[in-house]
Length: 477
Image 1 (cartoon, rainbow, N blue to C red):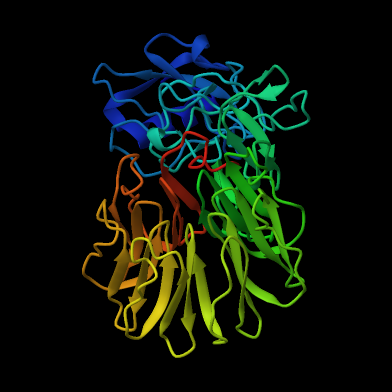
Image 2 (cartoon, one colour; image 1 turned 180 degrees about the horizontal axis):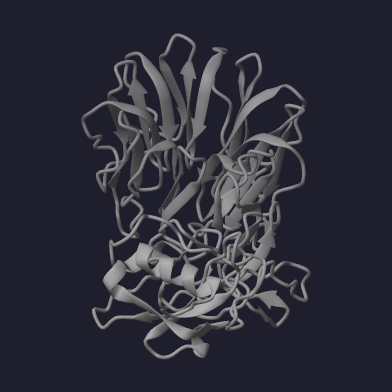
């Protein structure tokens, strides 16, 4: 009879439980501290129970059955082997923290997975996966949906004071590309804190929570609310009521004054706006006296070729420069100025035009209309049924209105544009500079200039197209 130590007996019992009676024998030299103390075909088992805490070498038979946890055998009860203290590093000096799992003295995880903090690759014994927090975890998360486990977390600060990403690196004082933290944006290779403005566009900012960590968010209070295309320049009113102009500035027509405005109009060589005090301010050419130092009771202003017309709050229209005011004392609900003529919409929805009639641009049709626009030498309007009607010079087809239902129209130099019932744009007439090739999308307003066009989409973003020889179709930041 062979006398075995209590540890040997328990080890044999464990082996029988896990692998079956025919798979195990226990060596008399059973005591061990790791697999390295055993033969190649042995494993170092510890009872871990309350009676015996010694470890002994257990022989594994040539049938290949492995009593290890996670093996492919199905012999024995579904019981996990004893585990060492999870706070202690593995005996092979690999620590699979922050959620370690050890067996037989080694940190275990799938091949190729790098555990957090140590960066060591664990050997394949127990399934381990990198989760979305870059930790080794039991739950399987497809590797392609995560990044490789980081080697350090939290990250260090760069010279610019911003935290670099877990996989980023500080280079030239800034965080290089990686996966940003929840309160950071990574845009164009630079890190930004929540609320930081785009250095190239004060209307954009970092909003990683509500918008995106990789794209600028648009300030809802900093969008173009009204736009007007002129001769070779364009002006617009932002939602914060600042006026911005761009394009040809030879006469300072693209250099607006400071102040808060509710409406702006770009003419041929000058521009005008109505400020919060209902006063008209103009800038640019004043060769014909088209600029005006007005009182404080105006509702709308329109800048034409060498004249300016404006509607008082009581509906009376007054003009300056090379165009007289309308002969009648009728009050108007709206007005528009062309090159050398103007038209107004009466409160009874009829139209009255005055000024030059060289091409029939002031021969307004009868009928009931809801909106009008005067171009260089032609005029267009929308009737109460949504149909378009244009008159005046038609050398390029600018006065040949398309059929359909429309909500807004704008007459330009030698082309016209309108917004259809589906909020899409349609242009006709001259297309010598692409001014009649509008972008696709949904739009809320349209303005046709001499050889370019501009519109505002439903997100408040301005778009311009057509001739751009002076930058009139290049919207500034």
